[in-house]
Structure formats: structure tokens, C-alpha cells
Length: 461
Image 1 (cartoon, helix red, strand yellow):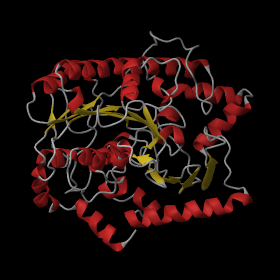
Image 2: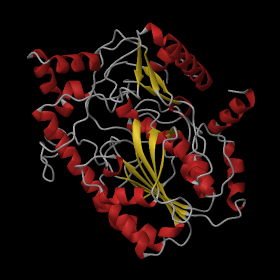
Image 3: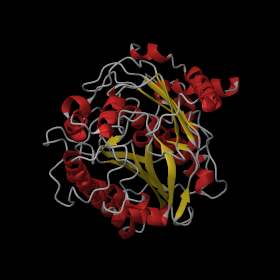
Image 4: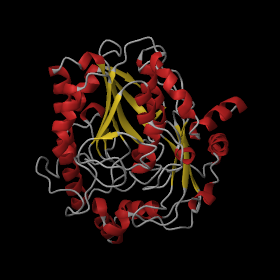
């Protein structure tokens, strides 16, 4: 990173940035679009019809993809709620905004979409889950039933207020609709509801999961929640059509990270970090377009500011608007991610860092001798006890999966072209030493630029 870029990025943490932010409201010179940001909670990319799932019904999300652009290589910076959401709202990587642990507040002075779009003259409202804080950094207009901080909020009781924002707001609006579906609700038996819409026999289990009756049952309940979420998406799209605002509105559908099964949420594996990302703006984004550009969710805020005609801000993320407009095909050469178990339920210290290019994912486990635990292993989420039973009963695949989930080497390397499920760790292959060295050096440089002290971050702040 050049010194000028580093100095500019440092300003993003300063409350002094507020002084200049208001000047941008009349600098665009173009009519500002409305923005509706739809955030799914814990949804893996393969569990959307538009991304190839033949079973789960997501007709409204699929319609968005047909009318806009779907990104096939979009990634969360961290597969946990608070860090990922804070990065979406601030345009900063988790170490820089300070909420790299779950349930952690960002640093004082960090600014978010609520500040930037408020200064542009937008009504900035949020319904559903926040899981970020403090309020000074996220001064959204909270629709009744929402609050700043942790907790799950399903938006059923808020839909009238959501639709009223679309229907009744005269000024441009930035509306976040953050349903907590399909996040597991711990009060429900097994974590997910008893499946009603889907048979456990019909679900599509990805190859990194162990195929057991229990896992299928919970996956079917998770599918139910996805379809419920899709119904709410449909009501929002219908309201945009009914009010004549669809053509003047950018609609974004995204998940914060992967589902709460093993090898998804709380990891730096592909299934935890890769997310659905769909953007629609009729007349501006070609319908039915797909992009395989490498994108991070830190790019979301600068993209939306760009589409609104705002000047560039000092952020880690970079606008993907040129990709949306068809002006270029590529975006990033590398995407980075991190993880810590500190702060999660049933977790102990377990720091992870990773980097991915178009073919390879390199993972560094900073405490490889530690035992990896979370709600999967301690509560039995995702059918985990059935995995353990299958492994001890002689199933070699189940035994290997249980071991790899909880015990990992210092380095991992996966060829995502040949092994998209990341079942074959190639880190010890001497013929790939140059790949590992190249990606490791890039990861070191990114950590240094972020001020990421690695293992020391487990006990910081």
C-alpha cells in the first residue's frame, strides 16, 4: 500500500471526517436513486435458486437476479454477524473498524452508511437485525421493533412500516431490511424449525457436510426459513412496482456470510465466506448479467455511494460500479478474511487469517494446537452429534470431517478450480510452495497495512 493511500484510509477512523461529509450532498449533479439493501442472515451462496439450488424456492430473489447482476465471487470479510455487517455499513475491514469479534462495538469515531447517506439528503432507515454498535456510529432511523445491538429480529411484524417507507417517503431513501432469517434461533428444537415445506430427503447437501438424517432434517428447516425470507423480498419488490419507484431504486440482495453448519459460519472456508450478491437498477444495470469478479463486502458501501453520485470517501472498500455498468469485468486480484472465536458463544481463542485469488485459497491458523469449538460442537447445531457418532462407528469420511473441523494445521491451501468443496488440503505439496509463498506474503502485507497484530488481537480491546 502506498503511503498516500494509507494516510487517506486512516482518516476513515476520525470523527473529523464528519466536517467535510455534508459538503457532498449537492456535488453529484445527478438525481439520486433510492436504495433498498436486503440482508439475509447466515445464508450460504448455494442455497438460492439463482445460484443453482434446484430445491429451495426463492422465486423473488431469483427474479432480482434475472433483472439485475448476480456476483458469483462475492465474499464476506469475516463469517460472523457483527464483523461482516459492520464492514458492509462502514466500508472498512474488521480490524480497522474495530469490531472483528462478534458482539463487539466499532471504534469511536467510525462512520457508517447512516452518516454518509444522511449527509446526501437521504432518509436512512433500518428494519430487523442490527448486531452493530454503538448508536453514534450507526445512527439509522430504527423502525419499530429494531434496536442497536445484538439479537435476532425477524421482520414479520415490521413489514407494514417497511412498506410505508417505500410508499410515503418523498426524499430519496436508503432502506436496510435485515431479516434474521435463516439464522438459527436457539429456542427452536435443533436450532431450526421442524421442516414443513421441504422433505429432508430432497435437500441438496454440499459435499463438505456429512450426510446424516439429522443434518438433512436441520437443513430442511433452514430451507423453510429461506423461503419465508424470499416471501418478504417479494412483498418489498411488489411495493416498489406498485408505487412506481422500481426504476428509481437500486435493490441489493446479500447475505452476511454462510449458514450455521460446520465448515460454513465461523470459518474462513469458501462456504463460510462466499455469499450471494445481487444488484438491480433498471436501465442502469443489464438484466440477467453475471459477474465472476472478485468482490468483498467492504466494497458495498463505496459502491452504493458511487451509484448515488457521491464523491469517493476514504474507505478500504472500492466501488464495483464500473463492473455493474459493464465498463470492466475484473475488480480485485485478492480478497482477504479473518476470524476469531473470542466473543462467540461456546468459543475459545482461535484466530484465522486467509487470502483468496481466482484459483487458490490460503488459510493461516494462528493457534493450530487449540481445539476449535462453537455452537456446532457444543450445542450440536447442524447435526454435529450424528457426525461424531458416524465417525466413531467406522465412517472414515465422517471421522475425517470431525477431526478437520476441530483440529487444523498451521497452514491450509486449496485449489478451488479442482476442489471447490475444499476437501483436499495441498499445503504440504512441495510443488505448490511458490503458490503458498506468494499468497502468504500478500496476507502478511495486508495484515501489516491493517495494523493486524495476529495472535495479539485475541486479547486486544
